[in-house]
Amino acid sequence: MDAFPPSEPYDAGLLDVGDGHHIYYCVAGNPDGKPAVVLHGGPGQGSRPGHRQWFDPARYRIVQFDQRGCGRSTPPASDLRTTMHANTTHHLVDDMEKLRTHLGIERWLVAGGSWGVTLALAYAERHPERVTELALIAVTMTRPQDVHWLYHEAGRFFPEQWQRFRDFVPAAERDGDLVAAYDRILNADAVSDDVREAAAASWCAWEDAVVSLEEGWVPNPRWAERDHRVEFARLCAHYFSHAAWLGPTELLDNAHRLHGIPGVLAHGSFDISGPPDVPWLLAQAWPDAELHLFRVGHSGRGLLDPIVAATDRWA
Image 1 (cartoon, rainbow, N blue to C red):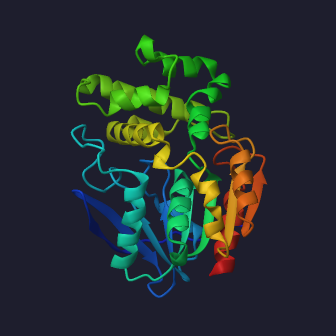
Image 2: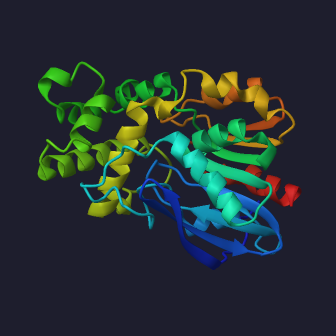
C-alpha cells in the first residue's frame, strides 16, 4: 500500500516541559481529524516529514515532536555543555503527557519506529487509557540483552568495522561494556571536546555498518553533519548504557496493560540491529497485536505497508 501524500504543519512551537528543556512540536493534517503522535528513532534522530505520510492528512491530526536534546528542541545535545541529568525515558513519557494536554487531546494513536517503539510501549503501558491504537515498525524493547547484541554480538557480521568501534575506547575497557565506555567518553566533562567528537564519529560509523547489508544501502548523509553526529551518539550512549531505565523484562511483563489496544508490529526478519524474536516475544505477550515479518532488514521494502493499511483502517 502506498504511503499517504505529504502534508505541511499548520501549527508548531516550543513547549516548556521543565528541567530547562523546551521540546519542539508540530501538527499537520486535519485539525478536526483523529489524533496521532509519531515517535522518532534514535534516540536523537529527530522527527522527519516523511513520518507524516503514515497517515491520511484528510482524516488525521498528526503530531510530531523532537525528543529532549535533539532536532529543534533545546538545549541541544550537540552542545557539549548540555548535560543529560534530566533526559531519560521517564522524562520523555512525561513530556508526551504534557504535549497531549497542551494540544487538548484526550486520546491518540501512538506510532513509532525503532527506538520510538520502546518509547511508545513505555508510554502506552503507563497511560493505556490515553492510547487508541499502536502502530510500530522495526520493533525494539531496549533490554540489556538487546543493547549487548547490537554493540557486541552483531560485530560478528562486521568484524573489521566492529574492531574499529571497539578499538576506539581505551585498551583497559575493550573487553568490558563498550556502550558504557562510549557513554563515559561522550558525556563526561573531563574528556576533551576533540575526543568526544571523535567518539561520536566512531559511534555513527558503527551505526552505518550495521545496516550496510540492506538492499539499496548508501552511507547515511546525516553522519556528515557534526551536530547531528554528536547529539545522536551522546543520546544513544546515554540511553542504551542505562537500558532506557527500564527493568530487564519490564515492557514484556507489563504488556498485559495493553489489553484491548489494537496494534500492528512490522519488522524485518533480517534486521541485524534487532533480531525478529523481539517483536515475536512482544506479540506473544500482547494478543491484540498483529505481527508482520518481512524478509528485509531494519528499513526494507514492505515494512510500511501494514502500518499504512492499519492507520487507513483505524481512521
